[in-house]
Length: 214
Picture 1 (tube, rainbow, N blue to C red):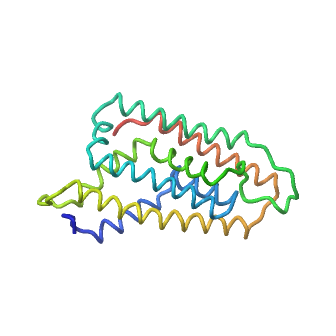
Picture 2 (cartoon, rainbow, N blue to C red):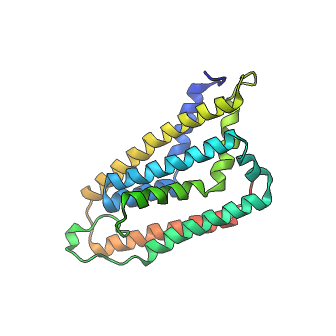
Picture 3 (cartoon, rainbow, N blue to C red):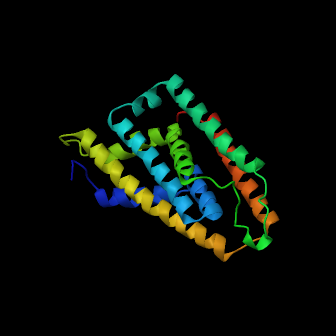
């Protein structure tokens, strides 16, 4: 199909790769736990939109610039690291909401509009240069050498990968929201959990800032 091969292996591999923990999944879990599955789904859709940017950029050859240009990689890397630090520090500095302890969710980042959550998910994904390089390294392995249009094959595989990712991300959103309702905790514990999530985001930002192109 579209000059691809080993499609079943690609789907299975893509699903397993999407399940690997990272800042995208952490953001979905945090927003779902705080504001319900719709907020987690908004974050997931933003992440999916960011993934489409990587897919089409790679298909058009733009992502190759990140893989070959140290300057371009460094600029995008620091932008992404700064954004992850911004999100993480925001969680670390967030204050408890007034209200009964029994009403506190698993984690309590400040409530955001779905539009803002979508944008947050988008930038968390699109400003990570490692995602762009991943697509350049992973997807071409499943494009047949005799493919009449390698760009079309790349886009088709990228869309399949993203659909897999959206299925997993929405499952994560629903399950995280369910867990937050099922296992209610006190406000103080929830606030510390929120700060822990923020600290993990800060660690992701620092790790990205120190990352090499590889």
